[in-house]
Length: 471
Length: 89
Image 1 (cartoon, each protein chain N blue to C red):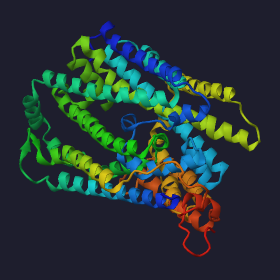
Image 2 (cartoon, each protein chain N blue to C red; image 1 turned 90 degrees about the horizontal axis):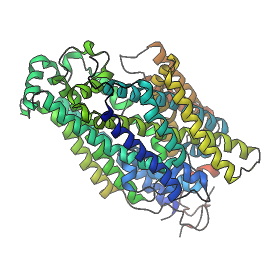
Image 3 (cartoon, rainbow over the protein chains, first blue to last red; image 1 turned 180 degrees about the horizontal axis):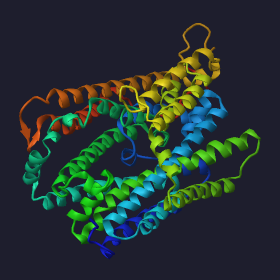
Image 4 (tube, chains in turn yellow, blue; image 1 turned 180 degrees about the vertical axis):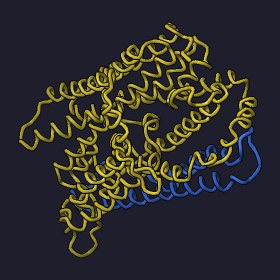
């Protein structure tokens, strides 16, 4: 069971080199481009300089096609840096903005911890070094380069990570095929041992309801995740966006199909029943440990670790921007205080580092509460932001009360259903969250005061045809 | 382009993206479940599995290409109008 690569130094070298490269990018971004006049804009969204290739690795066609240009145009109009900035402007509500920032920070911390733990466990299982070693090796470095380099470092390292992930999949696939005795042998073995895998519903293991909710949970609703929508604010021009949509679809498809297919072929390497290997989460680490020659293990784990760190850095910078920009700066502005550039720059870096450090500490001995938060995070974020962004940006009738009810009520309903294990028709709780959230939005839109005409005119410009111009 | 024209274009593009998503889901249903009963294998894998994964991926890439080339248009992200809310010349 335990891997045979105990204390294998080869396993450390590639990771050390990779993390050094990531750190170098963080420092280079800061030195090279510098953070001059408008620090917040440069630190949190890379001063709108992303080209097509960098952006592609981070978002898929759906979020960019539906929200990309919309938030790009609006953010320039309002000098917005975060998704919450846009929400604040659209609904003219500080309370709503604060709530949105809170939801982001809370759920992001849960997800980041889970990513830290996942990465460190994988490291420990595949290399034989301790969990803590792994956590320090990649965890601290992520926090460091994100704090130093800001969004631009996140975007650039994301690209490196995506390339690493693709390389990792190819390496793993190659050695799984070798260890399993070749492609034909593995497939023949599967036909004999697991005939159900060759049927779409997998003899009831894969019900239609699960397929349906997967389209919702990890498909359609992902367009509302704030860490994805914020990318729309950061690109240079529409040409980059178009390219990003195309490259993103190619890359994401490759990774999805590649890694799942490798998982299926891993049956050829791990041919016992799943229970023998603990949870499903152990499959890829154990496959790496078994199929890959010891001197290459270090290279092979870079793929999954790259996936972890690119997720963490992307969440960390958005969570930090929620605290600095959406809470602190908004509060200062409301009080009529101006914050100096130097203070702001120090504060942003410190907040990012402190938040990352906190998550790192939690990951050392994760309390059970963090798993609960993580379990709620993905669907919770979707429930909170989906209708608010979709209706808020494309429907004039969307108003403050609707948004507030939809965000608060929908998220609570989702979390409660999730906690109680309550399902309707056996479907994932995201369906409950989405339905409640939409219903509350419509109720609020009916009962609450409509949005002021000036705001509507900015968000939904109308042609001035003959009668009366702007109203 | 005036702000109003830009907004209309962006709205149209978002709608087209939604239509593409719908088309991809339909294709996925047809390829995954529609071909489930059809015999035939590609590299030892059932036809439905290959068409429902790699097939959907290729369909999506082609779809996004058509979307970006045919429906999306390049527009300046800066405000080209002189005065806010007016100047539709």
